Amino acid sequence: MRQRRWIALAMAASTGVALSACAGAGGGSEGGAADGEEGGGTVNVLQVNNPQMVDLEKLTAEYFTKDTGIEVNFTTLPENDVRDQISQEFSAQAGQYDVASLSNFEIPIYAENGWVANMDDYIAEDSDFNQDDILPPMAEALSVDGSVYGQPFYGESSFTMYRTDVFEEQGLEMPENPTWDDIAGLAEQLDGAEPNMSGICLRGLPGWGQVLAPMSTVVNTFGATYWSEDWEAQVDSPEFNEAVTFYTDLIKDYGQDGAAQAGFTECLNNLTQGDSAMWVDATSAAGSLEADGSPVQGKIGYAPSPVKETDSSGWLYTWAWGIEEASPNKDAAWEFISWASSAEYEELVGAEIGWSNVPAGKRASTYENQDYLDVAGAFAEPQEAAITGADPGNPGVQPRPAPGIQFVGIPEFPDFGTTFSQDISSVIAGQMSVDDALSNGQRLAEGVGESYQE
Image 1 (cartoon, helix red, strand yellow):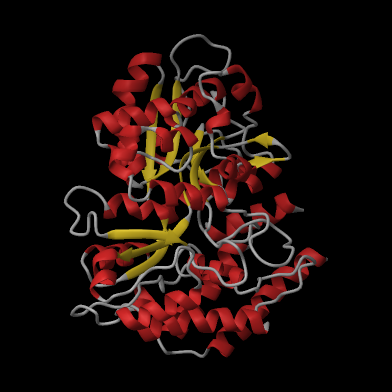
Image 2 (image 1 turned 90 degrees about the vertical axis):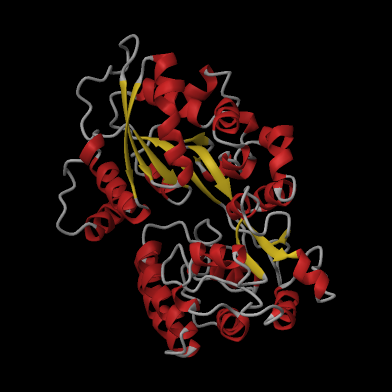
């Protein structure tokens, strides 16, 4: 049933594109050495166009192919495009790509459907890879029934970022473990602390991976949930209403201009350019804030993601590598993955590109590497603590029907979340009430829940 459900959703999301469509520049595996053949080979990789992946593409020929003889063909696409392409490729098991950049949202679902290869044997035979060095929440998020189906390239959680110099000027102090009430009070005092400075920046842009990501962590820690353990929709519950009202009011009262169209990138720019005093978002942002040339380098403090009724609320996310089950080149694919996700590769990035560009957040050894700590000392400890403290299986105050912190790990969530997020953005823009948005969301959630109950 789960497989039929996902295939139908994948096809619906890619209307007009056949599941067996050509996969572009990386398409086809002709000329590659299949499993069992010796030497060389070809690996076709479909990946998101994030900066860390672009760095990987630049380094692969000289530092991987030259050593192994394995040619790597990259197809690099924007996030929305690559997700559509991957869903077509893996649901059809077309075998045109050997490796794809998948997240901890897709990999458990794909594993249950038999679309990604089990990596246990490769891990057992490859002592140099050191699976034990992978941070436990990352390893768990990419495993099903104790077997590993993905390897993280980089990982993140969420935490609170704030201007220490502005706090000092205003005589304010960030609590060691802030609550959302603490943050709201600070945002009020910081709003307008400097010309055109908002008290806080939070995502308001529609999208299940945009506004719904941080807002879902607020929903969790306020004691709410999208669905109960038995799939009863809970979007119109008092706790859910309180969480959404708090989040949207905080943005409207003390947030950035144009908040309904502001996502991760806009908030990063706001904090970097001095247009916001605080930001609660991805730990991966810290590398940009502390990079050479950043106007706020050395001026940012880092604290845990705010809470209310839970001990922690940081999310968990990783761009990871999965091997398509239909790939004829699994051995070569693993060799590429074991290099790209290795501590050795992090050393290479540090030496060739810079330690602020290292794809961190996946290995314990990263946070013991003095070269990395020399650059990331301001945020390395809170970043690691946020990741290791994340618990996708138990993110709130009640049992859940599926794992996930900033998402719910079911195939329907992207469609549900995208539609629901549009109403949340309308609330932030002052075009809709919270009650109306949650009424619409409840109807959507009931449809999803009833399909699982049946």
